[in-house]
Image 1: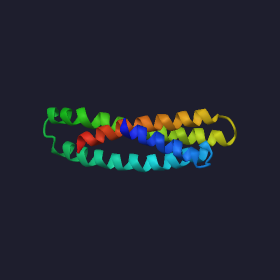
Image 2 (image 1 turned 45 degrees about the vertical axis):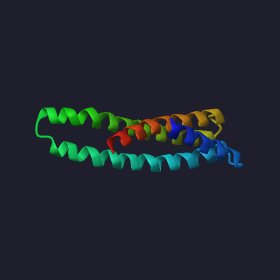
Image 3 (image 1 turned 60 degrees about the vertical axis):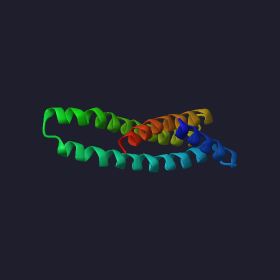
Image 4 (image 1 turned 90 degrees about the horizontal axis):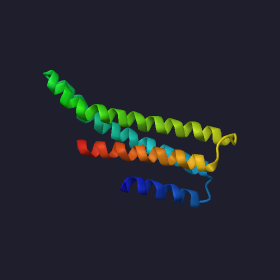
Length: 123
């Protein structure tokens, strides 16, 4: 939760810097994407060797217990990021409110927190 809190504080600071919610969300989206890519690298560094070393179906099941949820969480983060991009595009036409932009950023931050927790457990 500390990461989520930090991200939300960062987003609030961006809003206070005379940036529009859309500009602040764009900056947050770019930063969060970079973090997610780094977390995915940690997951791959852990999981690829686990699967290469798997000699039995049980070994594969053990790797799956950790790696499948990690990959799913990365994909959820990626999807939340893509959703934020759609919301940002819609905000340019006035189709969504500032509150909806903030909600999309919060959703992305929440999935990133889960991803970060999983990758930290792998280190």
